[in-house]
Image (tube, rainbow, N blue to C red):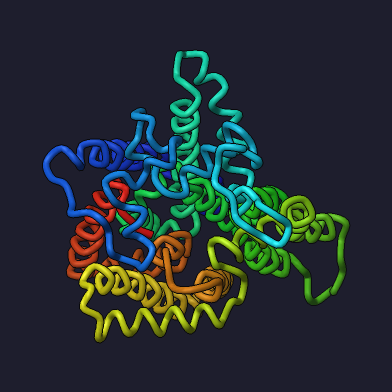
Length: 404
């Protein structure tokens, strides 16, 4: 992503910041439980007490291995299972669907766990057991994705790149990019696509968009910045399509092609498990409005303080993303639109849950924060707020409590 037109990327600074961040976050998660312990169970949501008691992980053997154990919780189980045993892991829990019992693994996209399988192979040679090797592989892929995201976000707008990168790394749920979750890899691929599209490298951007789509379904919205970039290449005065323009236009379709391939192979199983076990589906407005109503009741009249705090953070994330989309719309319409689609899909797929994590890949947030960060008071205030929230969220995750 280095180009004389956009200036030289300060590789040493970005790599150093990424490395120090990774060491601090992983180190903090490792020692978080040495000085205190939370009251159990977690009452943040109706279902969390049954999953967060003292033996809440007892039925999840893949999450019990001591190696880098603070980097795994909840959904990590499924990525480890797919990496080790494939989608039809016979030991994993199943969902009762019209097609019969289906492994819960089918609710998760394939690229991240399959890449884990590739990376874990040489790690097994050095003596790590299967779960430990898969965990290490997952963390390595997450961190690599984060490094790509850091470089790409800087390159999208170098005038504010340093601040935008810093605000990304201290975001309250940025620690997910150090865990066995897809956030790090997905954000790296998505932000890399945005940066390459702005440099008019549409084929490379399209490939990253396709890979992002195989990481998480929302990657398909990256067709939007690709289309913007392709339209900017057209000579509207001549209205002439050269072979090069046509080839680049085909690159725009790569994330859609990737989605269709995945849908043909795994789409039905994904839909059945999501709907029948996780209660989520695209444009599930009924569940969305019912969930919002319950959340508002919990915030205003509920006596469960943990639930009130949880929903307060969720709505804070949505408000922040909404403001950011409006803030960047005039200067960066492509990024505003892709950000709006990412937020819209997260909001309309079911009850409000995990939204503070789902807004993490929204690039408009970091462009807005980067521009506002030139004001010293805002910079200090946001940094303090974000770090305090991040510390709380990191500790909760390390204790296997529900975060997002």
